[in-house]
Length: 255
Image (cartoon, rainbow, N blue to C red):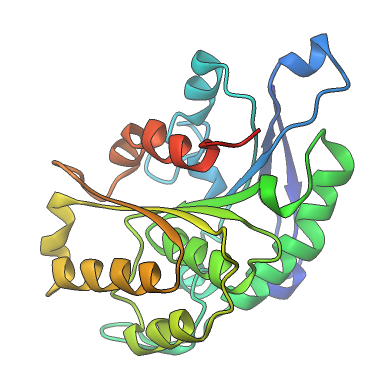
């Protein structure tokens, strides 16, 4: 089942409402004592329903969860969809200048502070979660993928595992590299990261950059699973096809 409601994030968008979603396996109806790991996801409007998705195509997460019987709660919140680079600001851990856009006032920290201090406690208090770090994951794509890396590195006390699909590691490279090198990473951090083969043409030197980032993360002793997706592109349809891969990593060996 999926529960959908509206939330506000005053620190980011005042009283403007946005959608929140939580999926709970139907097995809870048979055994109310069950408790589940939780996956938090960025760009919540694109996770479950085509009719809510920004470009009319979702990840189809509901169909995958139900067809596989995966025992996992998935919690997601929509991004700010105002056409003024609001999403870019909310999903940027850094303040920097971006060619063709200008100064980006990064609000990634505010986004994560709301998620771990407001949204996560609400989810843990209203749904049958296993709230500890070992059973709490985070995932996203593009700038949401960058935020998933940020969460694993800087909010490691809350998240033990992350999936970063097509992460925007071309963005604010020097700031990103400093974040990786200075992060206090716990020894059991797990990461799934991929990039579509067709995406490498989108930014200069992206194959080298992606390889560089993977090596940096490995050097911090993060358990990295890295893939280049054959024929993969920058779209929800492509990310949907990667669900079995990143779910396998997030849930691997978990009791």
